[in-house]
Amino acid sequence: MKTTKLFWTLAASVAAFAMSLVFASCEPKEPTPTPGEGEEEEEEVKEDQPLGIAAPGAGKTTLVVYIPNSACAEATPYILGSLPGDGNWANVEELKMTRCEGKQEWWQVTVDALNAENATNFKFRMDDGANGWKFEPKEPYILLDDAASYLEIKADETKNLLAIADCDNKVLYIDCPDWSTPCKETNKAGKATIVATLPEVPAGYTVGVVGNFAAEGVGYWDIVSGVQAMTLAADGTYTLEAEVPAGFEFKILLSQDGTTWSWDLGQAADANFAMGLDLKANVTVEAWKGL
Image (tube, rainbow, N blue to C red; front, side, top):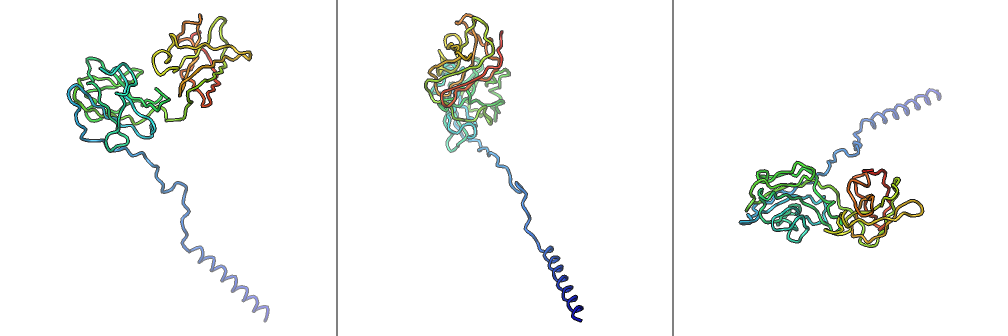
């Protein structure tokens, strides 16, 4: 009798436990979120185009340009080119762009009237005080509204904008949505050391460095009088100590006579070398061109 009672007691306990599992499995559960589920990628929202910018008057052209903050938030955009009355590709104060009123990503500049007769061509660049020509828009530009009636994108390797009509007293809108290089920290001006590991240098040849030793003119990528010769070190590398500006970049060239230099005789790679933040650059040239 006791055995039978114990059996039914155990059976009842097992049944109750099983029922609790069934009910527990029927209770609603919070869904387990999938990583990224329900999250949307943030898209860069383009500011509305500024309206109502007044025509600049006779003899002038105003260019209104979209430049996203992500291009280089700490830099100032300029317009450069064969601009009438404003110098030849000169980075001058008169060509510095200013933000349109109430906008962060729309900039404007007024220049002497662009016209097809003078074959005016130009581009935009960013200047953060160090990096020079590195900060340029990727192509293509986007010509907004009726800008395409007055400008076109040159179909050559420069991809500059070219005036194809008289732009006198016009306001032209241009979109530059993508830029070649994001802003990044570069070297400060000072005395720098370059150490280069090179392929075999032919007997009698001189190795030299050309770069942006100056902001413009003599010394600015100047193969006529701005190349500085390197010295062969005991370990087989070539070295140069020189004063360099902020944001210094360079290439390595060869010369048969030590005085005449050519872009067609030197490092095979097109990319420039960049100076390190510590004013030291240890570089390797994999191959020569022109030999």
